[in-house]
Image (tube, rainbow, N blue to C red; front, side):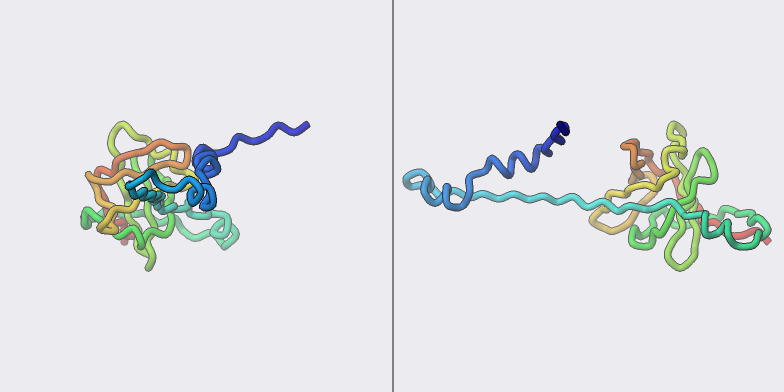
Length: 155
């Protein structure tokens, strides 16, 4: 006999709420107005890990050496395309348009948890900023971003 799966708490709350017909029969208490409002608002942006299998099928190219340059302390979340973990203290962000940024993480946060991508909780300004925002691993951990650096190929 299969074991039943647990029902999410939100679904139980929804199922326990009276239906429209039950509410009409019960009606509001004498002289009172009942107002019910439920808002569920949760938006999370998922940034996937860069897929290297397609790149490995192509002929081998010489390795690129990246040089870090100063850049703005914020990046628009809408520009994030993929992530790559190349160092233990940071993650490299690929942006729409081909640019590449390195997000340095705080000292106590290794980047190993971000191999399968990460989540970003969007802010009202639509930006992800160093010293303000954190990235969240799919396993539930989170790391604060200490700074951003633009990556350019060395000459």
